[in-house]
Length: 232
Image 1 (spheres, helix red, strand yellow):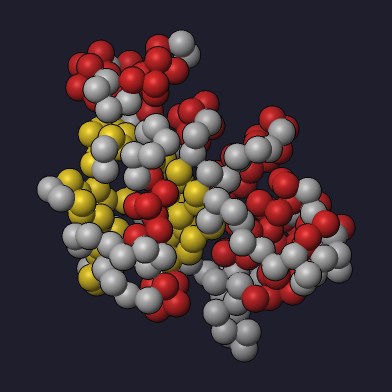
Image 2 (image 1 turned 135 degrees about the vertical axis):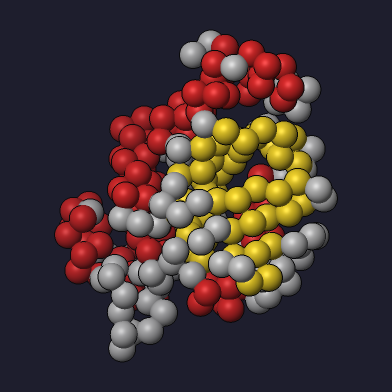
């Protein structure tokens, strides 16, 4: 399947089981794009998932179709325990999918040690892991993750990057909005560069890193990004 997002005359498709990073300077519309897909803000244009037009759908209906969303603020329930937060991610408690509470706790010992602790006392990295694993509990086909490494220590950033790769290897597609270029370029199969609300480049990290023509074509919209790329 693919998810197609159309903004103006710009179209991008997200293949199955890939990590696709949406890059660009602050304010170009990256977070608005994922919020529009998820029904958090009114979209303009067409949004299709598995051949179904979903633009304008309520977010609970979009989630049931197989889309997951991890917002930048993580949006966990601080007064509930780690286990309770995970249980809230289930679409149907009577018919769990391939991701279970026990599997999440086995995969992430940090969360297991805090299983019965209020989520509000977790560290920033643990809260991000909880937000991502809670989304997995809904058994999505595609997860959109907005700025998962913001404000985290380098060691935790590496753990979050490894988690994203592990989720993709398990058969879940990921659309990643990420400011840390090194992370996005290392774990992504493809990158999209956004400028002024439109996609100005689509390709592999190597194509973006090494192709002078590509850099010149997108430089008007992403001068800060190009400066980072040349320094790598």
